Length: 572
Image (tube, rainbow, N blue to C red; front, side, top):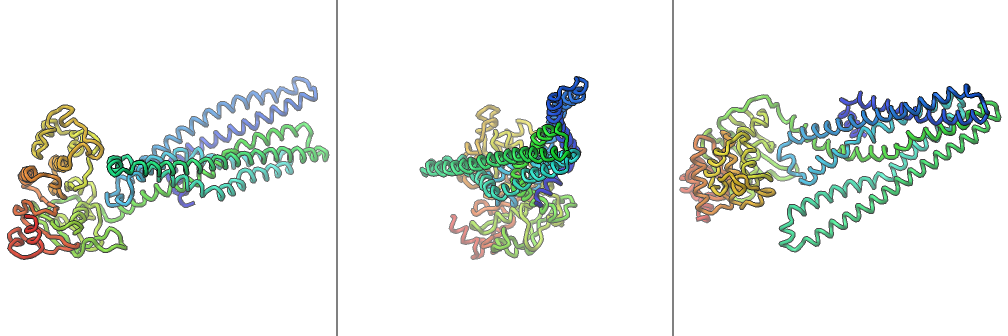
């Protein structure tokens, strides 16, 4: 239940609104009980043929409770809806703030469909956390106590009988229902999550499924999962209906018990006969507050599961905040790695071991090596996406852990081989880093990266749609688009991870010429497995199996007989 308590703490800013709505719900139920009981009183009293004056109090009571019931119900719904929407907005903002603080390294272990499911479906489920989880038990408890006290004024025996049936229908039965049914609800939530993940995978990988003729297999899997979900939901619905039927039986049992014991009380002269029908209808009205409790128990159980998934992300964000004292402003300067080790998982072997290096401010440096050598991991560490497990990384003499993340992102442009192209136009992708850039500036940058085909301000130019993940662009066009974003960002440190992948030799040559000229005053780090144009680098660091195998100027490395010389020879 710790998750429920955390959710309650999260909704604490709206406690007064929730209490007001609960109080109005209590008044509504009180009016309903009063309406039925006064109606029964008038009918029973009228059977004795009294004067109209003796019925006036009851008539006024019926009018009063009839009017107030509608007023209180309207006000309760108004406040409840306002509270519900406020809570939904609060949940969304709180979760998004937590999600925004996460580094890419922290969400790399989550599937995109799973994250989307948490952001959308899980938060949407908590929309009714007050209406279906908090309010029903609270209102039922307060109203039940009031009804028990009311019945106690007529007969303590009848009050105890009603108390017993309320406990059976409102607490004991829902508890056993929860124990029996909780596993089904868990399976439903898990299966919905799996279906969402499968659907997004199918949509994103549709072309591959068609190419490998696997679309029917995947559709059959989805259909089977959907059928399982339908069976579980049907069982859950039937179980819920059965629960409601049992509550109805308990209500009828309470009515019969009150009639029997009420008759005994009348015979014993402990209760005027006039009040027996009043109490019987009061019993029926009192079960209005009991009926929502089965749903509330189920909703609380599901809210705990949903909350656990959301707090998992929020706790990651909290860990990110506590990794260092982020109190120092970014200062450009030399980049220094001191005995750095790094592992993606504590149980796995380190992908970087004892990395010590100095990258001078304003220099051009290449990080080369075969695939899996740790080059990209090096870039993630420098960008702050990951934290080293040993050693320290400093920029301008400041430990990277003490620099605010937003300043790191602002001052380091990291263009990875798998950078993200947003589903918008070419211009919109460029304006992600330069919101106020004029069209002329965009055209100039596109020409610098050899993307002249997108320089016209038309639907076929820089206003053309790049597709999902840049699917309408070639691999080389995507890389050059990312290079254009780096130019617009104007950061003092530029990291290119396999930026020339997918380019023909002529385009690669022209692009590198442009980049070297544009970034000649900046710290430029090339991460690559190719040896093209490395002769213009100030220093080359050769990575192999997570370590620096050798480093030096291009001339020094080519003069030797080390790993770089073999790479260079094999690629010529």
